[in-house]
Image (cartoon, rainbow, N blue to C red):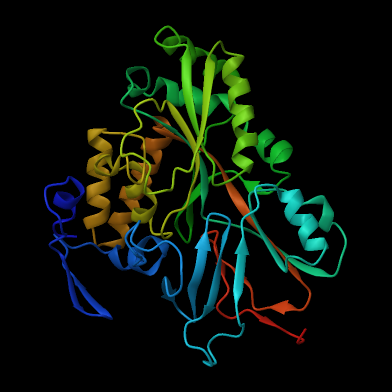
Length: 379
């Protein structure tokens, strides 16, 4: 968007390329052709929302589609029909409650306090092993990643990234920690071409690369995204592997998705989070994650590899589909060889709903589509 970089760098108070025509219409001017731009706007990353701090709780916060937000706080939120009496909304209200423990959520489901449970990359609670309910389980286009801070010298050469990619047994993580609720990470470049985003588990190769960097640092600070409780268990595994190699780990939990997170967390060595691309378009996958211009915003990698940045720029400006595919393929191979970020797995989306609830759609983005949800028999 024209003027976005000046705004992001604090040089301007407004984005020149965004013009408000009226309460329902805005005009956006781009600096250059950008084929994937409409994909950004159509997905969660492009939603228009209130500026953080302007509106936090209360009525009429924001509306998208048949429902609008009525109330929210850190424990959850409530939606109500955007237009009362409209046939587009099939329910009087939708209430979402955030649980940090899946077993507690399962018990609430069993006791009738919850009608629906969604899990991203977590094994199902034991309490819902029996009962009158429906379930869905599907792969997503989201990724759990281990990011490296390339501002730190011992990581800039990518030896540490290679070591981490070889050190971690993704199969064991998926089986033992996630209960099979995930898949090995790959990227779908086209209908006929997918590319793996991981290296095989090779402890000897990991030891070779770790020996090159351990003399530079023996203490690592790991930030774990508190938005997803399962990541705490994955972090225990990561820490154990590194401690066995002689590293001391300082773990810090923080919601990395909050806008209050500082642009630069200087003490980050590694960060563990769930990365949700705004679209399955390859630009939407790679640019927010790897762009050096977005370090401290959509990524904390501070990855400024010249060749990669050229790949990214060409990918977002190229219109020809075959050339875009070639660029994306080269970029994926480059990342796999010299990883600034380690892709751990692709979590499955699991949905459990009471038997009388229909119309739930699980999307590959990891989100739920509840626009058509309804209760079959009036309670």
